[in-house]
Every structure is written in structure tokens, then in C-alpha cells.
Length: 188
Image (tube, rainbow, N blue to C red; front, top):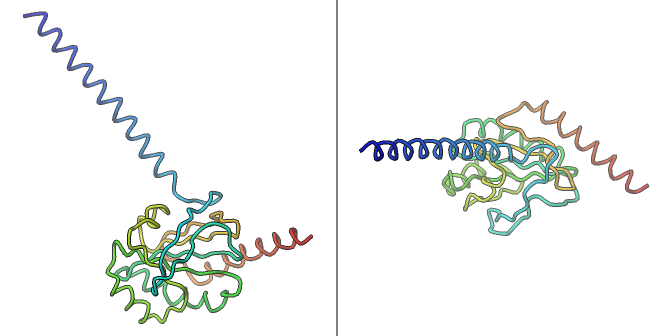
């Protein structure tokens, strides 16, 4: 009887220790995965998404210009506030910056997303993330979330939430200048 109790006690202690160690590993893995967000200095995930006409467009990777990538949803109040600014930025910087809006379609309704584009008269490319691949790869957990990606495909800024038009202009001017200096050095 004592032997059974001792064995049972040992099994309970070992099980408790195994659960404790496994939870530590799980917490460490979750902490590591949250740190793996595309962040400044790291390569932006590359993928293709369809636009509103179902033509695929490449996101990430090397490009000729700076890329402003904006994740949004039609039900998102802050996205409504930001939409006119993004359209104004596209008109002002369209020759120096590519601007793609990525609709978090897995969290939205496509019909409502199309109505949002019409309502705000958005003329920059709108990509549909129907499978949630881009949202997952870019670790987007809130809308809007934007990224400024340089011509080498490196994330330079991660912008959660809405910022003012002046802040947008300051950020874009800063990275446009960096891109121009890079081109001048390459030209020689």
C-alpha cells in the first residue's frame, strides 16, 4: 500500500513537472512568434494578391519605388477616417510611392469592401486578402495597420492605427529621400 502511494505521488510530481516545462516552452514560443512581426529592418513577406478585377499584384520583394501597404476593413471606423488621407497621399506621391490597400477580406464582406472603395473614391490598387494569407504573414491584428517598405523589400516603418496627414507626409518624405540617395549612389 505504501509503495502504491509513493509511486502515485512520484507520477503526480513528474506529471506536474512535465506540464510546467511544457507551458514554459509554449509561452516562449508564443512570445517568439509575436516578436516575428514584420518590423523595421526585416524583409517584408512576399506574396501575390488579386485586385478588385482579380488581377494578381505582387506585394513585398524588390520594386522600383517605395511601397505603402495599408491593411483595412470596411467596418473599421479608423479606416474610414484614414481613407481620404490615403487617397490624398496617392495623388501627391503616386509618382514616387506605390500605395496598395489590402482589404482583410477574411474579416470583412467583399461587397461592403467594394462599396467602401466607391464611397471614398479610392483610385489606388485595392487587393483582396480572401484567404487571410497577407494578414497572417504581416501579423496584422488591428485595422488599420500600414507598412512602408523600401525598394529592396525591407520594412522601414510599421504603423498601427491612424496617424495625421502631417505624420504621413513626414514619414514618406523621409523614406523618399533615402530612396533617392540610394539611387544616386548606385548611379555613381
